[in-house]
Length: 359
Image (cartoon, rainbow, N blue to C red; front, side, top):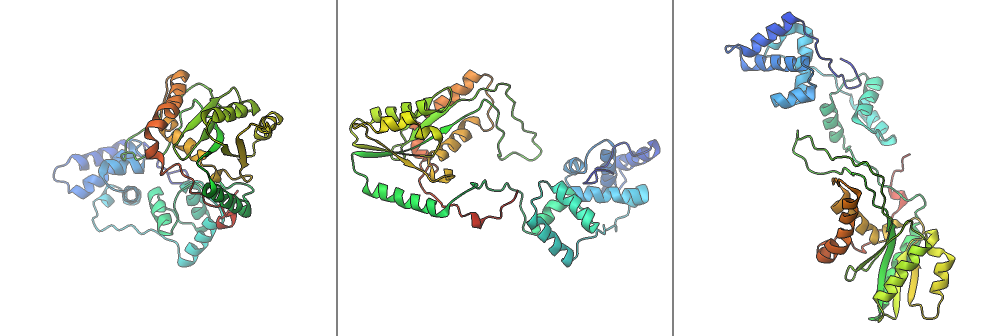
């Protein structure tokens, strides 16, 4: 065996050993248990992992690994012994408490890292499935940490939410509110989590292009009107085009409120000059720094990715661009009522103190 999780190298059986095990498997008078164990050893010798052999035999990999240990200790005769019970060493209560402390203090990226840590520190071996079950029993789960804004300001977030609620409460019939931001869909396959039948080897084809769309958009949550501007880059020029489009879209509105982040191009001289015109009806409301959680259009971008880019393959860049445009021009207008529970202005303040920050 080798590697951190005890991978068994194939072709460990001699010709005579293999012949003996094959007889055990084929012999009709052989009890089912020993024949099954012999089959497991043959599969391991053929190059199957413990996990793969376990799937073939409908047992767990701990059982297969135990049969292998039984084989190495006593050969074919040991496989025929029905009263065999594996005696695996486990961590003591003190060691378990120390392990929990270690796992809490440091984020281990894989079960292999955890296994290596346990073996090095406590001298105890676990199979992969056994280790995962053990970690679950200790209250640990495998998931990504939340991306926390580097300088999230709780007071600034709270102040924005209060101001936004006041804006809505005081909003007149001749006013409208939009959330604006940029998004950059890439012509790249984006594998994403999904429910897959156990044992089914699912893959997504990779694309070879590097095309990136640069979209500057604004979304009104009242009727899900979404205006999209595409440019070579996102800049003051696309900002002005977007704001002018909103103004043309609502000639009857006295005030068009646009909520957006503090990107440099939103503060450009040309933008400020246009906003300063006496007849300009657009008013910008800037989000607190590092607060994408307060921009509702970010949720629309996530929805677009789930519907267009996740687990999707497009043979050509043209088909990819068409799919993105179809989402905004066709899918969103036709299904916006289905999306209202997903793309909302139910904002939550991020409290950095609520998280254990790693890295």
